[in-house]
Length: 90
Image 1 (cartoon, one colour):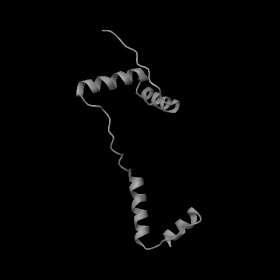
Image 2: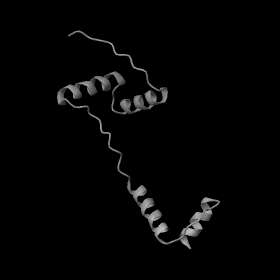
Image 3: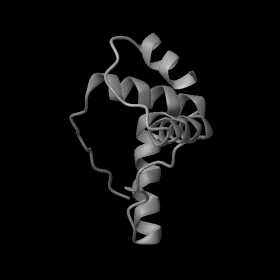
């Protein structure tokens, strides 16, 4: 089997963070890249999702809390987060 070299340009922080994730699983970035291409060839698909992530429970709670605040009819501008919270609980 002949081999080929692939060179890509990537942001340093992204590479460092990706290396940390790969290392957690006992892999290096070259192995992850080969696995990605292998999966793409085996499935004839790009193994990525472009759908936005679903909000977690904390985010869903915050969204609901904001909707309740808006539904209460309270409105206006607040000079600080503290003032906003005071308005929300009063």
